[in-house]
Length: 375
Image (cartoon, rainbow, N blue to C red; front, side, top):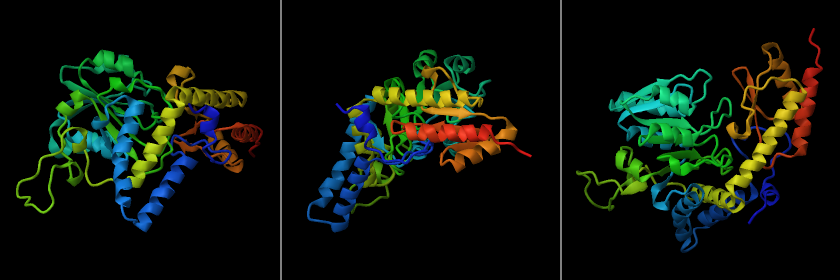
């Protein structure tokens, strides 16, 4: 079993990096796997194709070990948006979701509804911007066949109560965009019917990586509309006047042949996560998020994200007064702190590799901002 300290030592991100909710720098093991397979691919030794082909099964098994979904109910995707489009174009009936979700989700819903006219989106607008079981229950009608939600709200870092949402929606499909929490939130993924994520954020597997995992119920209700050559039962050399059928199960939800090096990067990341344990990573990230909160409170900077550890992931959102935003942003920049500034807020996000040197830089930036005199 790998310890948190050993896991953190695999990463070499520089001090001051607090933007893991946007993208996470890859670790040594992922980089080594990428280089090894790239070298194999460049030399094209006899039999090298076998090692590349093996990555498809490897990444599905790695996803299964972390999510609990069977490996044959997992499809590799290059990003969350591709997985969302697969799901939304294959879904019919009423879908309930928040209008404030990260745009990848509502855009996929709108595109499907406008093109195929079989999906009926219903948007809930929660008072505080986060989706709770109570809010979902208030908006449920007999016309709702599925509910889509982000496991972590990208604006506030609020962690959705998947168990509570499952209880109120019954046997309706529960579709979870997991990109903003997968790898640092110890969520009950098996309660969802579809789990989709990319690997470039908390998994630190780089861009071009991700997956979709489906329950039996989801596979029975979703149509693989976007099933390309990578998701179809075909024999090359034949005639295609009649379209070949899609592959059975999750394999149908694929377009072309995926990048085996990307699959290897994601598999390596997930194998590391399984070795150290999601719960251990979640606890370590929660401790670091608590440190961010302490520093914000020391500097008297208002915090817009949840304070309850059960309701937050690795994200802390600062909401300084409008006339202080520019000063604080400049202080962070001057002290080498990487954060995400958006819509009047500053989002900080930590990971297991976030150490004392980063907290020291953040403290200096907050102190500098608080003592700046404007004329």
